[in-house]
Structures are given as C-alpha cells and as structure tokens.
Amino acid sequence: MIRITPDRLIKAIIIFFAAFLIYNVILKLLGGSLTNDQILFSFLIAGLSILYNNSKGLARLEAKFDMLEKSFRMLADDFRNHSHKHGKIGF
Image (tube, rainbow, N blue to C red; front, side):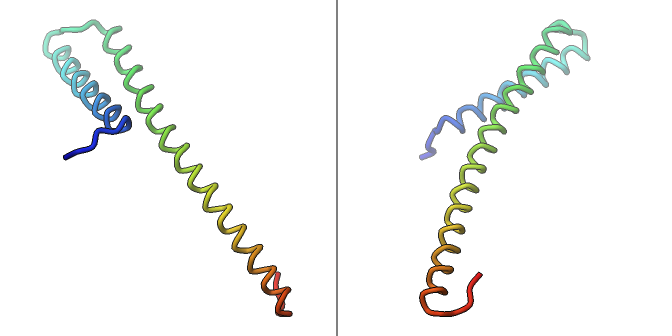
C-alpha cells in the first residue's frame, strides 16, 4: 500500500498540472485552446509551485545539517574533555 503524504500529494498535483500545461501548449501550437496570457499565467503558477516544493526540501536539508553540526560539536567537546581529563594533548 502506498502511503499518501502531503509532499507526495503536492508533487503529484504539480506533475498533473505540468502535463496539462504541456498539453495546452501543444494544442496552442496546433491551433489554439487557451490564450497566450492564460498559458503564461499557468507557467508562472507552475514555476512558483516548483519553487515552493524545492524551498521546503532545502529547509528540511538545512535542519538536518544543523542537527549534524550540533552532533559534531558535542563530539568535539566530549573528545576535548576526555583528552584534558586523561592528560593527552587535545586541541
């Protein structure tokens, strides 16, 4: 069973919207369906939705990097304390 998460739902909506947009561009080239401004507005919406999706992913990666940075800082502090405690040269 496929789990439907909000991220997957948003990605599916973006993919369907992009397919609809490509279909309308092809129709426009072959004789028209939507007007030029409607197609340009659709491209603008598609671009903004992709930008939103990418920014969510970037924010998630930054949060993971911050957690990794905290872990390494704590490890370095622990190593420094251990080195000083046992008389070995630390940094």
